[in-house]
Image (tube, rainbow, N blue to C red; front, side):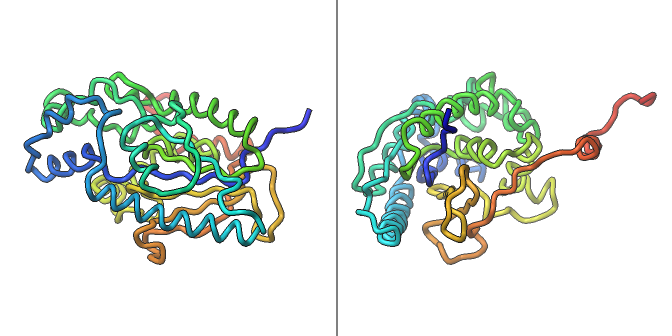
Length: 294
């Protein structure tokens, strides 16, 4: 039986700045927006982009159109002939996809939806802090923390396996572009690059503006941070032009500043970890014992 392959390229786009993103920023600065409560009483799937988010999507679309047209020219293909689009059926992702301006047909896939944040989703910033305190965000728990009795990233990965299987079965020789959410894309990176749970924890901390300095003593890693309209691209094409059976390279692009090395990560090979017996024992030594007799 022939082994199925992922699409030849996979381009992941986070939605532009949403009204949720904006009111959270206001609240964290101590100046809650007067419409914060009304916004959070609306289900997250119906929340729109801000004017800034629309501009970010337009900028990302300009970059993507240039990229896909140049790639088609390089391969001697008709532009957009092999490009297919999928989106999370949340308003902010749909709105972003529309403003990208790609001349393709878009299809919804609810497996690309945002992580379910359970009880936390419809609470204002003040209500979250009052009810949960420091438990409102537990980056250090990584993929195993059920956000507000909602969904773990581990569970999100389960639906992503189903999505990836569909891509393998139906779109092997095509290029795919997807518009979704920050933690959806983080989970896709976790799976495609074969990270361990602690890698997710480290990524969440070092790309968090507040935690990176507080816990790691260093500035935010803007190259990897999943900012609004961040583009993450995977390819099976090797640097020499030959094709691998799986994704072998990845890059991250900030469409608003594509030439800024602090915000972009150029193509790099994907190195998936393998462990010897000694490697396994060395790895777990990062976790402390709590029983003296051990």
